[in-house]
Structures are given as structure tokens and as C-alpha cells.
Image 1 (cartoon, one colour):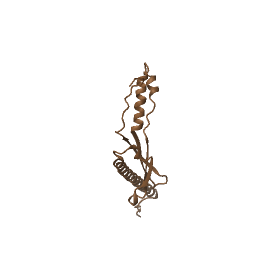
Image 2 (tube, rainbow, N blue to C red):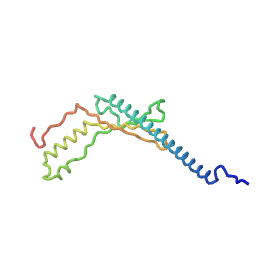
Image 3 (tube, helix red, strand yellow):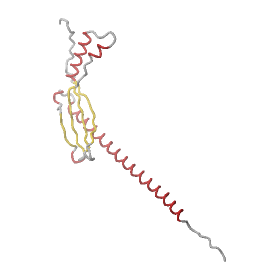
Image 4 (cartoon, rainbow, N blue to C red):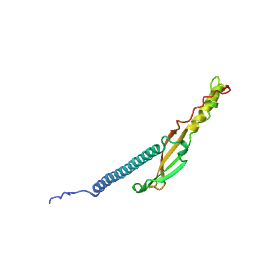
Length: 170
């Protein structure tokens, strides 16, 4: 009598092969899913950057060489049917410089009154001659709207810089 040799895989070998194969497939699916999300996020960032740049250029062209008063404090609209999931808003305010008097006075030796007065005059001038304009693009295609902003500054070159000396006659 001759002994028969068994040819084929045992149950354990088959189970181990299936575990290895399913782990590989799972890793492949996870990798492609996260790649898709990265591509989508990159596409969103590219669209937002392009729309934000476009709107900022439009604002700069519209208000260049115009009085600062002509820039509205608030304005909003959408990008039309080409980009229905996006809208934009504009917010503007006069530029505010923090009071530097305390900082100047606290340094070694302090600051004299003339320097503090000049700094205050300069701060007032800048506050009247500079307007901060912030443009925000809003993406409404997700659960919570995402906002992306850029800020620019307009300067009124027609404002005269006060050069009066405090306490001086003249």
C-alpha cells in the first residue's frame, strides 16, 4: 500500500493568507481615501486663493486714487453662478495705531514731551490717512462655513502731515 500525500493548503495557511491579503487591501483603500481628501482640500485652497486674489485686485482697482470715505465700511456679495458655493464680504475701518506713549516713557531715561507729542501727532495723522480693508471669501460647501481673509491698506496721499511743534509759536 502506498501512502497518499496531501497536496494543497491547510485551513490555517488559507486563513493567514486571507488576513495578509485583507490587510493589504485595507491599507490600499485607506491610502487612496486620504489621498482623495488631500486632493479635494488642495483644490479648495487653490480655488479660495484665486477668488481671494481676484476680489482683492478688484477692490484695489475700484478704490485706488479715491478718497478713503468712498470705501464702504461693509459690503458683501457672491461670485455668481460660476462659484455658487462661495461668497465674499468687505470690511473696512480707519487704521488704529496703539498708544506708544507708555512704551516710550518706560524706556531708560524716559521720553520727553516733545517726542511724545510728535508721536501722538503722527499717530493721529496715520489714523486719518490710512484705511484698513479686509476681504473675506466664505466657502459654504461644508457643514460649517469656512472663511479665508486678506487685508490691505489704502493711503490718502492728499492728507497733509502736521508739522507743528508743540508749545512753539507759529
